[in-house]
Image 1 (cartoon, each protein chain N blue to C red):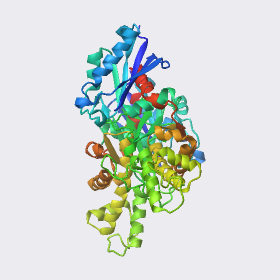
Image 2 (tube, rainbow over the protein chains, first blue to last red):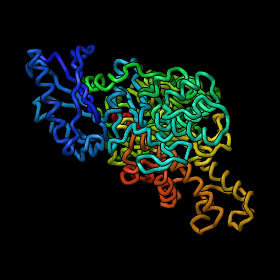
Image 3 (cartoon, rainbow over the protein chains, first blue to last red):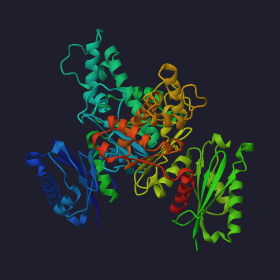
Image 4 (tube, chains in turn blue, red):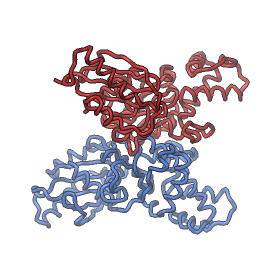
Length: 312
Length: 312
């Protein structure tokens, strides 16, 4: 009888694998290094080896496993990823290649989408069928969930919220465009804004003279009422709140959930986004849209991948 | 055998009713006046009378009819509309009230959503499963369609794109907020912008001195290379293209379809929106997002309502 599933979170540095009972809580997690050499040609094989070893050690046969879900760091459409620069991949048929190698059903989606599903299933978004998940990390990713389904969209760019235009049109994004939300709302973006304000102001600041400021430093300073930090956080919140106001009238999510490293800042993040959201959002949505923090941390990906597998 | 359906487009002035074979082309349409007296208490009864008369005249029994779909001018959730100011309605249980009165299955949604469904089924969006429909009329409405389903959202505000924040923060919207897309991209908004540019510039213009400028006048003047009109259309396109760039990374529609009176301007509208969309949109979406004009005109509502009924 099919009793178990595997959830795989494929990142540029490590591959996290979670072992779950069907519809249940994480039993065990383990990870392997991502081998990006030779265009990442060994990655799928390494995943299969790791899962086969785990099955062997736990005396499981293929009959015990329903399948595996996997989140990959690139846009996915019909089980195929077009390009994952972090893995060295061009176009890879992840679903059919993995199914052939492991002889189990596979479900694949974009990693930010999958993390969103994890938070929806067992994290900050539990209980909401309509949700937008925004990952505030080195970059800004996202997932749009409508009626419990991730919206991949026409070419897999559903939830690519980091590339929504912000109110800022100063900084160039890695994608080549000026002013993407990611340039001002990612961890990197927050530091960029803080440095800009430090340069253009002569106000005292805890951040002044500090080497390698992090977004955590900025939030910590803001919590101590540091003027430059508060101004930075407000600018971050204005741009993020502005984009959230458009998301809110597009799919009208019940909750917008923030994950990624920046979300560890806590309630101060929610407060500043909500302040500006209230300025830009359609009236009825000011009262009815909830803002939440992700709760699964680095496990969101394996939870979401397990959920994907559950849905098969 | 169930062979027919009715599609109802409930507007503030008239109620349009279409008679369709299941899954087929419009056979006949007729309309009645919308009686908004006494808080619109007779509206649902009037619809039922009109359909019953049509069935009698065509010798149809309830056994011949699968059901009816209806689009109403307000946000709908679970068959209930919270408020339709144009009808004099507060909260009305449209689905259950109509089902009780007519003794047939009823499916109900917001009128802009329903018009989007009409265009998706038989109009400018035919063949696309993922679509955003934007109605540019007196106001700006919209519908978001993912995997062939309209996204109503948590409180029925899915597709309320007219209230997305634009780049402009000058004009007050009917909703009470400053800078909604509707304030610069509706027919009214276009006239507002033209009047502003006429006031703040001394350039010659065909529009100058004209009484009661319409958005059609502005587009017609732009087609004749009138400077103020071109500037107006460009401002309209900039704001609409900007919001479309966020829609594109949210649900990643295959096509964005423009309907409503303003869309009669034709290709000039598509060209100016696309020009600015290309400035703000994520690179892969510049190539893959199609912009289309609606083709069903005033019949989009009854087609979409029939489609709703088909889906039951």
